[in-house]
Image (cartoon, rainbow, N blue to C red; front, side, top):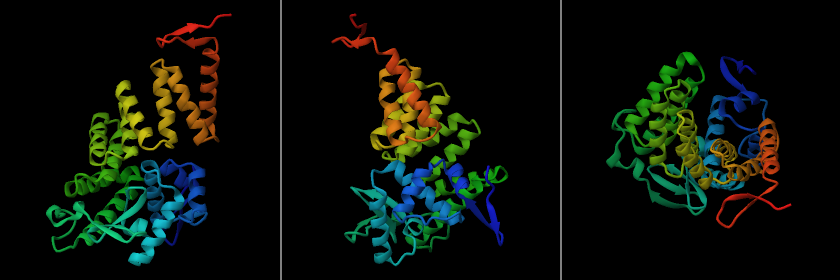
Length: 312
């Protein structure tokens, strides 16, 4: 395992650190580099690690391409004078494009249209993070800063209790903050507090019904709890929201196989291989697909949906 480098007491993360911490594939980083969303480097700062996390979540929860994200980021830099909109504002999908929560409004930087942001309206004043005198933009920035601190605290076992406290403080202020619900759920999942993790993941799916990552993580914890039917439904929802979500296809294929539904599993094994064709998981998916095709070779489906042996 690669150890994070240190330069003048500032933690640096190697490429392998980023892949390990955020569960990314090399091809994802390469795609973001080609789009100009991330600069190719040997090591990355904590701020850049936060940007990787944001891009990962955007990829998991939207159908917006890296090229389109880059266009929205560039437009936001021009409109709002931000150096890095992905960190200085909150990215949200509206329609087919990326918009940003900024200064109490949702901004589509390409059309320069504004929509009132009810999540940061005065009727939902933030009570915990900072004094009431803070304006909506300052409150949003403070929440983001707290969130990034909590992410950093998650990385070391000794500081996980502090991370839990920060996430809980965010959720006291903004109970529908889906990323905090997800991250806190994952902490409890790793601690094998599966019922607590399930509750937090379910809250995330309610807070943002288009959050594919929330349904994926919900499926994982339900699988651990031997609730395979419900886990399958959660994975189905994840791939319905984001058809290119490779890991969700992989886990859905496993779930179908465990329920004896090999033909349904086959579709998702093949989809996974198409989406992520390189590496040990792709090799396993190919092997499973070959086994299913071999076992089903002498079978056909009758009009009533039953498997029967083919003649000859």
